[in-house]
Length: 406
Image (tube, rainbow, N blue to C red; front, side, top):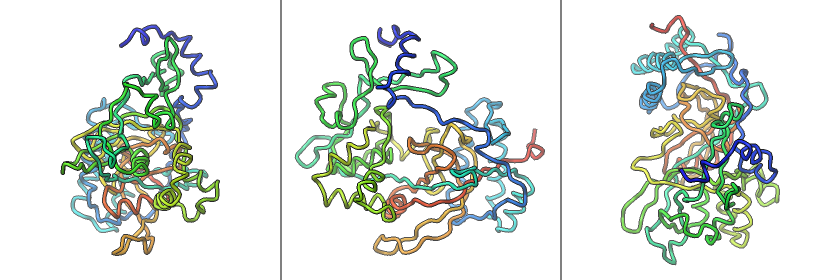
């Protein structure tokens, strides 16, 4: 801890929060409402089924159980107007896991849930349960440990001068709030925006590139996804994971291109954005710098880790607003998924009813009306995640109190 940290007073923190220039670096939590999840009656229960026949579900549930066992057994998790302990969540997951290991029929599954579980539905964006589902995946980029003419775009580690301040340490009324910036003399100021960081001269000697990649647009989308694999020119592969960000607000370049009438809303996808930027390289700086947020990475031995710090399960792990939904809990989604043909193109959208686990979060995933499905890596994952933008419904369920074994 530097002398700058020790000299920050509560008065300075208040000034930081009130300064107009710092609006972009304050991470304000979503206003939590106890009605985010609404307990529904038996007559409102959806028809439970699983479109991928429980594949990967056992592994994902076990990961959630492992996480919850690290919590105090009496830690509270909020389900709408109700709350349950970590131990109760563990019992719920274990009970469900034991049941699905026999690959039950749809009829037996629904009888079991109706008999043993309470079900809660997200109020969604319109308070009637509409949730916008998007997707994310693990991109694969080409890179090198050395900068060359071919590999010239850096993937940066966390800068030495970037500082995150937890405001809850100064007052309980700032619970969950943080600000990100750097010290300039004895002042704490916002960290550099994307445009300044990519200028390189602003960072000086405060940051090191982990690796260099070929494609600037692919690197931008690596920032959006939060993790990926870099296939090096020496034949090795490294896993790159999100470490922190510059604290600037995330702004969607997809929305920017829609507003500028560059891409119709009905055609918007990650693939459309990539094609547009490839065809219009003179607009690259303008479009990418519209998003001032910038991500810094670290290397890991494993594939993508969620916010609970364990490996995500493709098709089973979802990202939600961690401030309003119970982490690690079992959920059920009703939405559509794409099916692709031999050429990797989508040929039809099909109903997708599936059990998932709340195991991740994201900067753009805010409120009860947003959910992000992790699709893994590969051609299908990239295609599905790039086009996924569909309304659906989100449910959570938990073992009835009388079913919990003391």
